[in-house]
Each structure stands twice: as structure tokens, then as C-alpha cells.
Length: 255
Image (tube, rainbow, N blue to C red; front, side, top):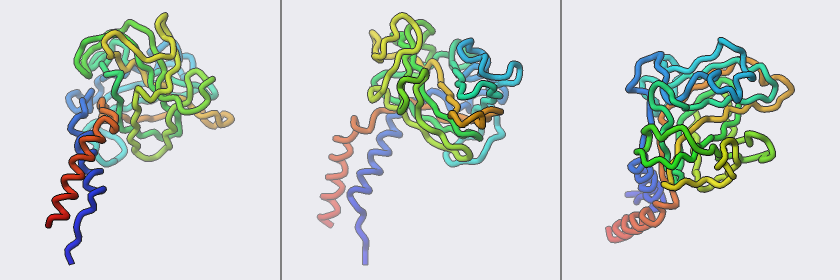
């Protein structure tokens, strides 16, 4: 008996391929040497949160030694810090980094990346509304208001809690910027509305937020990142995917 492929499976495959084909990479850390600073500064760099971690013990660098996972290259980015403030957070900023500084993103699209952490944490994005015209991933500047995007709970908190990243396994996180929610962080133009004159801005920081678990969240965090890409929202490809799936189903029925 010859089994015919399920048209819905074909549709899912086509949409997945379309998403991959339309992805615009920021960095996968393969073009740099181990030890290089790429995109993200040392966790102690930002004065907003330097007081939450032990001075002189943190770092951020490309590494070729990391936990195994699917879809990773030969190198990833490692961030390490010792959290000393209960329920504290770390602003992992891209501000004028040595390599891939202030990476440009399209505020109408989204961001995807792979992450591994050895301790549970929440993650929210900080996007700066620079109004740049630079290409995706290029230096988009360092002026403009910063909005928090992707908070999923406790919006009264600053920063709001974002996606929960469980410890001990590689996870792919995806944030669709237009879906928000958005909360103002810093700058005169930060108003809880993600906009700019050109529709572009920069990925200003990752807000790494410790869970509030009665002090058990204190200590050293080791975090690894890979495959930062700007991607279109799936709904923008649905019509095309449905059309391709319908065509594939029709051809199957004719066999």
C-alpha cells in the first residue's frame, strides 16, 4: 500500500521552509575567534544592572566549548555572571560592542535565537527606536528611546517578565515584535509604543531576569547563545503557504 503525504504536513513544511528562506541573520558567531566580544557586552558593562552582580567575575565571549545541541555551529556565545541581588536582572547590552554593535532589526518582524542556561531565568528584549536605515544586523546607532518587548506576565515589574527559559537544554526563543506587549524602559521617546520613522531600530539588550525563589536564584549563571536571526511573522506567509499546500494536495489527488 502506498501512503500519500498529508497535505497539512506539506503545508507545515512549506511554511517552515519559507520562514527559513526569509530569515535575515544577525550573527551565528562563526566569523569571529574564540574570546571575541560579539554583539553583547560584558554583563557588568551596563550601569543599570552592574550592581546586581559580583564585580570582576563576569564575561561575554565567543567560545568553541559549549553544551551539545541540534542546529548549532562550531562556536556560540557564552555569558557568565555571579548574581548577588535577589530577584535581580542583568541588562546584556549591545551598545557599541567591538563586533556587531547595535544590530539593526525591523520593528515589523521578529527575532529568533537559540539559548542554553544552567539556571532558570526569564528573558525580555530591549529594542531601541533609532529610526535607522541600516541593513538588518548592521550598526543601527545608539540613540533613541528603549522599549521592553515580549513581557508575558507581571507587567507591573520593571523589566516585565518575558519568556521562561528552563535550565539544562537548548531552547529556541522567538519574539514577534508587533505582538508585544511593549513597556517603556528608558529615553525621552520611550512610551510603550514600538515605532520609529523608518520602521527600524536596534536590539539594544537582552533583559536576563532571575526568578524570585527566596534567594535560591543567587549565584553563577552560564548562558550560551547562537543563531540570532530576524524573521517574518508566520501569518505573513500563511496565504502563500496555503496556496502551495492546496496545489500540492490537488496534485496528490490526481495521482
